[in-house]
Length: 146
Image (cartoon, rainbow, N blue to C red; front, side, top):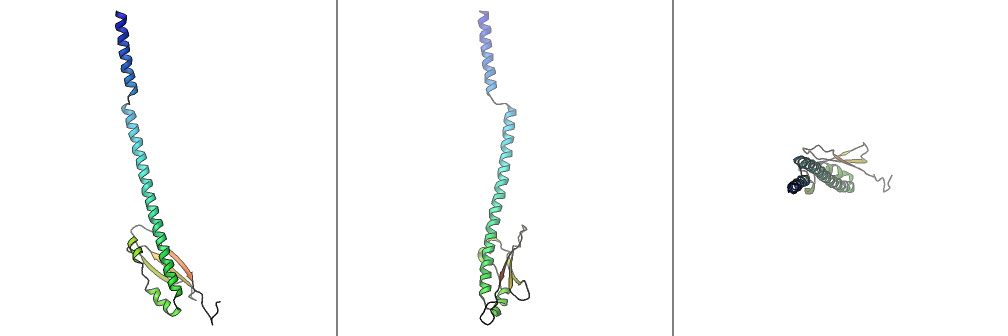
């Protein structure tokens, strides 16, 4: 009888030990939570950087389209109207919605007035490089191109 009692106690202890071994310890839970927090913070930083990259890419594309439109318009004008049109450049409403302080300037790159430089300055809180576009004007002499 005594042997049976010892055997039953041993089985109960083994069952209790098995139950404890199958459960998580507090150390494992802390480590798992730490890994989860570290992973989530890394993913959130990557998401923010990706969103900023997409936004900058979209702004760059809008700026290039705007400058191309203005350059096409300016190169199509006769030479006497071109200088006054260069002084009256302003961003489109679409570009203003992306960057309210944006400004477009035009200047000649050389003395012969053959290279027209358009520059879009963002004037934002976040420093961005200005976008430049250069177009060449072909001068017509007596109906012939040089």
